[in-house]
Amino acid sequence: MRVGYLGPRGTFSEEASLRYFEGQDVDYHMYPSILDVLDAVQEQEIDFGVVPIENSIEGSVTMTLDGLSKDPDLFIVAEVVLPIEQNLLANVGTLVSDIREIWSHPQALAQCRDFIRGLGARGKAWDSTASAAAEVAASGRKDVGAIGNSWAAKKFGLVILQSNLQDASENHTRFVVVRREEKALSDADKSMLLVTLNEERAGALVHVLNVFAALNLNLTRLESRPTRKKLGTYQFFIDVEAGWQHDHLQKAISVIGTFGHQVRVLGSYRKSKKI
Image (cartoon, rainbow, N blue to C red; front, side, top):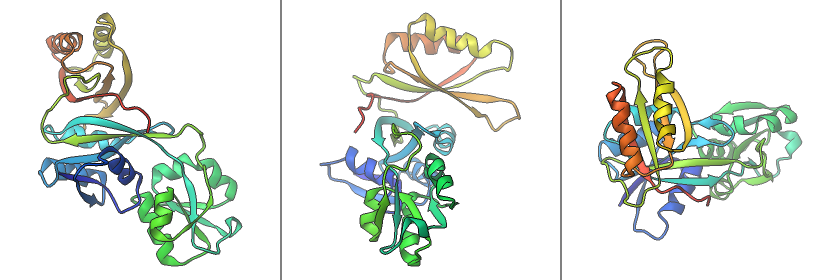
């Protein structure tokens, strides 16, 4: 089984992948971006891709949402909720007071905004927390640090100067496991839908949401993204606490379709317990 995730070694995506597929015979592949992971699934270079989709502090990972909406063959078969502890990593001998610049992924920098501001340091964005940690190690500098996990510190020979840097103590990232073909679990209890309205008019979205309410379907997330066709037009990502085969969800999809709106099931899976 081939599994891909955002590299390099030491990312939270790697940690989520290893934990989810623990004990299975897996050939892991690393990719430089989230879209590269999704493209690899689409082109069948790998069987599964693991990508972040939502953080409890910074919200949705829009690159993942846009990638899922672009490729109609992609299907979410599982989710993994990983607690995120951000640490200040540096070369041996570095003091916290020495650091003038902090390198990391934009999401990690945003999650630790208060800490960086309090330190009086500048943030510099990298493609991943692990690539930032690798560059700090390669530089040998003692005036820069990286924000990342303890895995990255071990892999690149860095020390942890300070832990739990995130602005909110309850910091979790939700990852999704994606494959190329639809394969909904018979015991799935959660689904993700993509709804595209057939026209922009007052109350159109309300009518869609009322369908879910009338059928007693609980929505846990509603996110809008541009359709990329015309300014001011949007599509909506909706998480529903029901499996794809649930009678009420099937009825909701059918009713929304009779209104002329497009509904695509992006995935159906078991709700994840926090690791």
